[in-house]
Image (tube, rainbow, N blue to C red; front, side, top):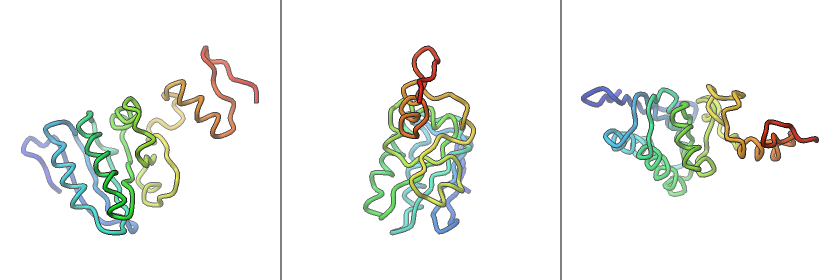
Amino acid sequence: MEVTPVQRLRIAVSSQGGCQVVDVGGEVDMSTCAQLSAALERGREPGVPLVADLADVEFFDASGLRVLLAANDGGPRWGSPLRVVPSRAVYRVIEVAGARHLLAVFPNRLRALEGGPDRSEPSGERGSGRLAPAERRARGQRHGVAPVRPGGESGGA
């Protein structure tokens, strides 16, 4: 495992379930995002899915999001998009930036290893109702559930 001098970022790259996994913990910001970028590049293998497991990331800012988006943009050249397992901190930045539709987001490592179209919030927020009202309405409409209207009322189905 690679550790930065002040031990603000922990990164390990391994193979698991037919995927390359970059396991990240600690803080991802302007001073540590270069290490994340290098680890994601090291983890890439042609035709092998890459999972960025960020479930143990405690702080994440826009510089980390730029790294994820750049790694995802390189996905077609490697034959597989980046699969992201976010912590609450990571998910919050992805949501606020409006980038959720740009990344394959999975609730946990197992689901990311399985792949597929599932794009869900991190396990710590599943069912917590912490999504923005517009996102709740959109999800409700996509899944055939009555959308939540402003003021908290449910629409009739």
